[in-house]
Image 1 (cartoon, helix red, strand yellow):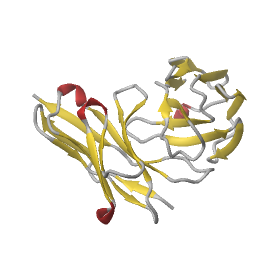
Image 2 (cartoon, rainbow over the protein chains, first blue to last red; image 1 turned 120 degrees about the horizontal axis):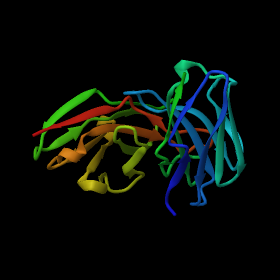
Image 3 (cartoon, each protein chain N blue to C red; image 1 turned 180 degrees about the vertical axis):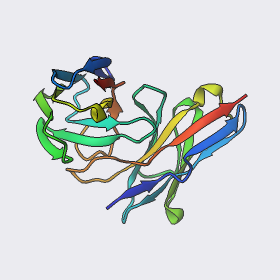
Image 4 (cartoon, rainbow over the protein chains, first blue to last red; image 1 turned 90 degrees about the vertical axis):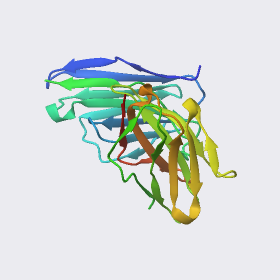
Length: 114
Length: 114
């Protein structure tokens, strides 16, 4: 298995909802990442998990809450989001946290906040 | 700190013509360099990567890139572009240091005309 699987592919949520994004990989990668991408922009790093521990939090608002229950799974819990949070949310993984091998990306979750 | 610049925001190439997308990086040592491609609404796919050794790197889909240390560049090339190559292309740089993540350029949009 050489893929990163993200679910759901599309999500519409209200500003008072709580939802979660899920990311899964079975390549034995030990680092996992959440990125946010707006249209026509590069991905912006949100969080990095290294060996299941949060190693980078790029000053992301607390309405985004990451979780790494095990080495294969990464969640992003969403609560009280704003319309400007609408974006493509990408998960990625890499063999190790040095980023030297490049990342394998999932196809993303298209989030719309209404 | 490392950085990466893609000077061209948008490039249009005729189908069958050759392509070169520019990427310049800033880093004190030899970085790890990557090119990713993203089709609309999709995740990022790794085209090729450079770590060390031969400065001409072959990738998937007929792409190649050349690392030029003297010019701090890692330009992507393809001898004959196909309409399906129309997409967003991102250059990225990584370093051998835990606690870091890939830095992406702003991207170049490639359009292919018939």
